Image (tube, rainbow over all chains, first blue to last red; front, side, top):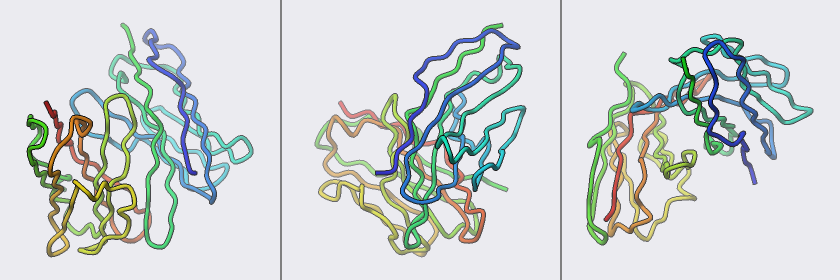
Length: 114
Length: 114
């Protein structure tokens, strides 16, 4: 079945470090790919997305490129800030007979120390 | 623009009791989703409505969970009777019918079953 596998957490980095959170997927069709972020005490927010192969999503300094050949959508940021501390979820979306199902990974908790 | 509203934010009940959650989607969004997020896991889709019809309820435990969306706007999710393993955050999301069909999430209702 369709699934998303994320890098195990938690991840702890120092401020201004380079961030990579790995995400790979398994899907029968051609999914859209997403990164959602959940800040402490808040709901899920869309961070970025890509709808087809080789698309790059970007937002708030974060980037991820849809790699069909490796079925991956790794999240990267060149210089993290304390305010980036949150839980990050990779997800895929498939459309089938009108249904738009989001399938999420297990989440990666990121902590940035000053 | 107002976001997705959910209530209550927190609920504590004893096992075998009943509980109901309410969701008001973003104005004009035809599609509404309920997700269950167990601690340490990614959200899992329970049910998807399009207007007031059910599109996908394949992962809804129908022996104890029910949901309705009267008049195609607000929705309620009910658990009767609750079990310990129902302790989770229940997330509501909504999206428009046309592209890009991005799902916007509410803050969630945190349920603890004792």
